[in-house]
Image (cartoon, rainbow, N blue to C red):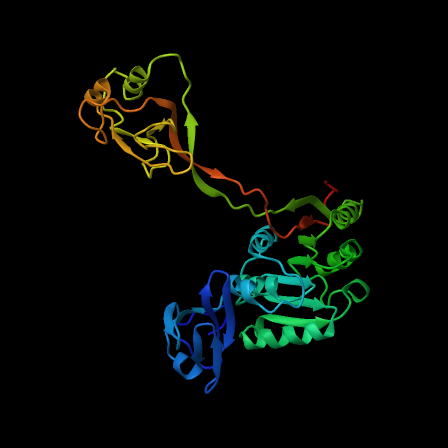
Length: 370
């Protein structure tokens, strides 16, 4: 098993993902005879051998899921040596760079290898990744990880300064990606690495000043780049929530309002079979009746609201009665009518990694276009 080959069961030296929750998972290299401790108890590696991927594994105090490693899962639980790119940015990068099996990619800023794993899965088995890392320690760790994950044949890691020394290949890359402090100074280096027939360029920058300088450099006459654009991806989560839309008071009595609410287009009743007091768990698209807090029947109170369900057939509405009351007793007057529906609510604060992706097309023989 490796990151680009699927397996059915766990084998020795496999890198697996131990899943204890969406916010609690970690990678594990299976070694015969070893034991790993979790909050649910010990995991004996010998017991993992032959265990099917995607199934539960019983620990001494509970159970976990054993998952096969993928670039997406690796991004969520990898050991951080630097800030990393997450799935939303990675998906846009692989799309805009037009990566496919057989593509040759140059990357500067290997870091923790989050993007590198996604690129390798995309370009395998015929493509290759040339990734450059300025820090020697991170370079060595990345090389070891790629080997452990079965990806060594698709990637070469270099320890060098890309701005001063350039990429190790020239006129060979289909795409170039930069994640370095001064990307504008590496634009010429990127152009040398790209094929003479053209290619795609991408730079990730955490601040707008770097992005502005990079765009200005890409747009200079004679740079060979065109179609320059910058994107910012922000992840937003929406909460699905029930809301109540008030129905306008048109100055008629409660009994007339109730009757009107269940009338159809042909002035026939039983279009809406029932209405509920606000707060009940009810189908979307029903009518809500809110009662006054002063009701002696205790149907609604600001401190301890009691939720009642009314049968709203036309005969009972005209009589002013309901199932929750004694026969002939008039229910409390409704002070507000509302329409129930579901909608998406944005959270007050939006969390996410802020960064700018600048893309450009390398076409040295064409006239310059912004």
